[in-house]
Length: 174
Image (cartoon, rainbow, N blue to C red; front, top):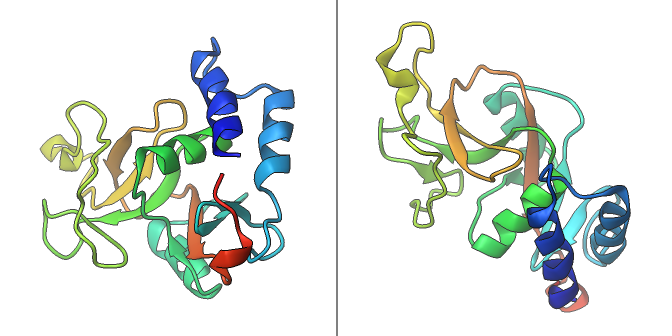
């Protein structure tokens, strides 16, 4: 199944608009939606389940939403995971990356340090020092490129929650 997803995602990357066609979206959804071990409404990939919000909240409110569902804002641990997430998102969304604790030291919400980096060019820039932008201590993933941008945590946008599959033996990797 991993090969099938890569094939579909590869087509997505080659598409002129950078978005999956409706047929590709349905195909990928059939492969991933409702995996055993993931709650209803969540999408399984590898050993994680993902929830893609349909409403907008601040970074803190989005994190609270995830935590009440025994999840957290997502932490991107591989290029494959990033590619998968971008295939399902057509707008910028919150990810679980922040430098709130110490400016310039980006960490995932689980406390792990940032090792893979997909920052957009000249990012993070903490608003470029502009009063207009203020402190930019939270990260979003861009919809087409999958690159990251730092942005004010108070900004209202959609988000993605991530949690481990309950029974890893029942959720095959794609």
